Length: 229
Image (tube, rainbow, N blue to C red; front, side):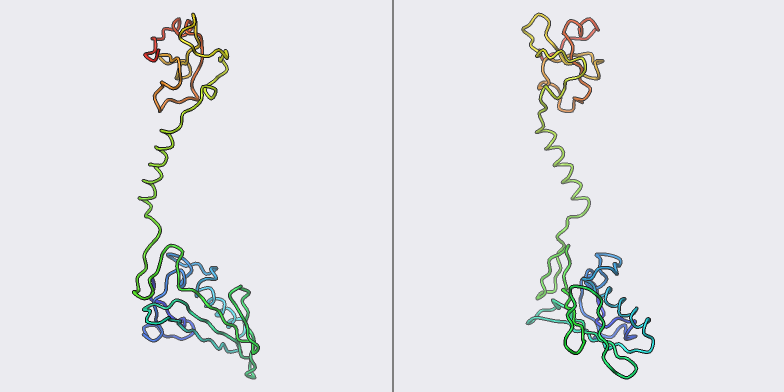
């Protein structure tokens, strides 16, 4: 939340005047959660900058500008802010000012009206009590949740034997009852053990580095027999 000026300092020269200050979200006041985003049409900053530019481009004209806080009942914070603006030329004739936003409506006299909501996408607001509650978890909490989800996904992932086939795959299922079954060797074929089934391997096994070969070949390479038999 910000202590927001109704009429910006660049138009009024007023700073610490209580009548010109109301509670506003940073989103409404400056267009961002922190810092400024003058392109955000939900913010007063956008309209203040655009009207300031209009005055700079019309040095002999005047700006008639009104800002009003809209409260409901006994609310401590306003739910909306209303802006009304129109230009006046050197003869006092009204000159409509349109900033090309969908929030603008212009009446028959050329006065443009904009209603801005005193909200923030990252919070819920109790206007009656004057309390804003954040709805976004901290970065630390979000990271812990992400890590927990990743661990749960990894523990539930059971790869099929077909996903571990390599260029040395003979297509023969690993069956320890045959004379020379196909076995799995981890570490690109360099592991000291072999396995009859991928289901018995440790959960952190890199399945992309599995090599399939006949058991006799694995034993000839000096591999120890797997305890998964």
